[in-house]
Length: 292
Image 1 (cartoon, one colour):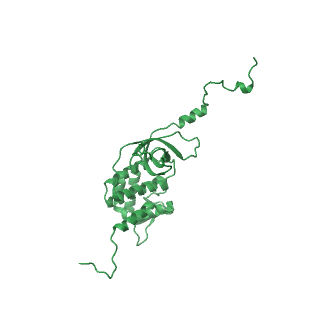
Image 2 (tube, one colour):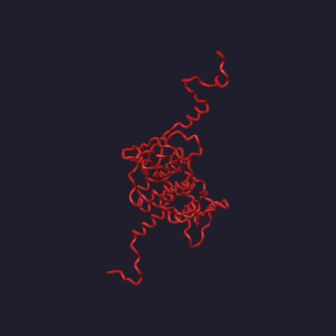
Image 3 (cartoon, rainbow, N blue to C red):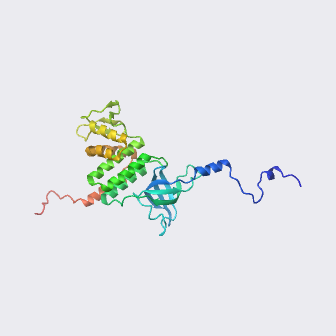
């Protein structure tokens, strides 16, 4: 019998088990699934039985997944994929194409949480979700922001209207700081000089902390120093305490800052405004007297 040729020598015998190359084995191990702490930010239909879901995970940031069969009546995913509920998810193996953005959702389990927030708190929660969807890049983890989001949801559920405004301003500050677009608040940005406790300042999208303009709501230097200290500390409760006295002045300043980086208005904010108009009684014309 003649010796096998070069092509035959390199070919495995029929029925022999194929051995993966070392590189392939390493890639498979890197793609192995690990549990991720997550919240669902948004979902939309993919097919008659499946969903595309935007998740905010602690370990991997914002991740898009395909939840196959999630719309079926007896799917284990259906009662779990709800907003504002903490879940633990397992994703399929990382796609071979690193640029691929949609992963397969293998499983999701409820990890405890609060009841669905009612009324205005529900709108506030969706506002936080829209901020995260529009400002966070995919697959860019922010563990501290994830923890701040979970803390904000709990605070919203227990707050009244004034308290909700404090929670929203505190989260906006945390988000902007995590994104690297919030300047150091205890100093004038252009001169790097410390703010004066009794002086008034405002936040400018491009110039940072600047002296306030007469006639406009201003943040005192003392308030800015307290907020900066709370941001550095990392406690949500401490930040809300520092924000509370300056809530009104922060609202306009942070709205301008967010609009600058978003480039457009938020849908949830407009919905809240429209709902408030429906709930508030219509103003009476000046020539119509109030019935006695």
